[in-house]
View (tube, one colour):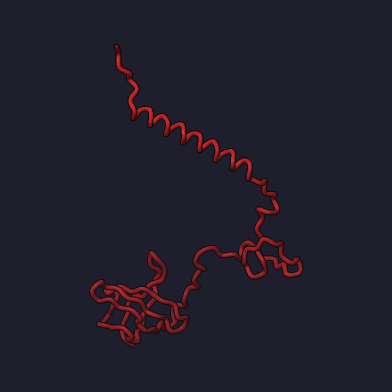
Length: 148
């Protein structure tokens, strides 16, 4: 007499697989029954006069018109500094071991990067310096930095 090829483990795996399939079918039917079709008005988002997203349409009296070319996405364009202007600033960060620092420009409070190779003399944090501005790979950077 031959032994059955179906083991207890195989039966349990099959039961588990059928149970998961049944659960999945029940969840799908439940989602279909509970889903309410959203209208287009429910899905729309509006921007109010302050630039905040809202679900209510804005007041037409508060409407402002903007030109597409006036909208800047990302970092705003930096104005080129005049060549003859004397650039003065204060070193607000300097890491001698890593070889770089940042200067806060006195005129426009902009932070400029500088590398130790661009130093004319030794400097430390909070020193007032005079420098030239050069366009680097990541924006403006200070070159020919020396104490004021």
